[in-house]
Image (cartoon, rainbow, N blue to C red; front, top):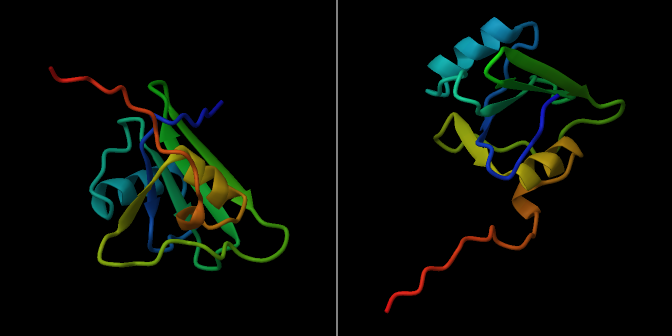
Length: 120
């Protein structure tokens, strides 16, 4: 089972990929195009050229998980644009918004809590 946690590193491949690729092909894209290690627990999100489906790839220390979501109608409209980088980082909440075909850039949530250390 894939658990998406707030501490999880999530990278979105901005450019569309060939959806005939399986785990090994997507892991190669992680290494070559995204310059990231697919074995470090990062969750990678890929989109096909038609933007009708997404694939998520993650390694859980025993093996890879590969899951796909295909929309029954329409396309994923809020896919990140290529702006010089092959990847974009998302928070867990932004990924869930993207999976529900929302715009992750438009999510408004409270900032992630961090402990404050008082200096005296």
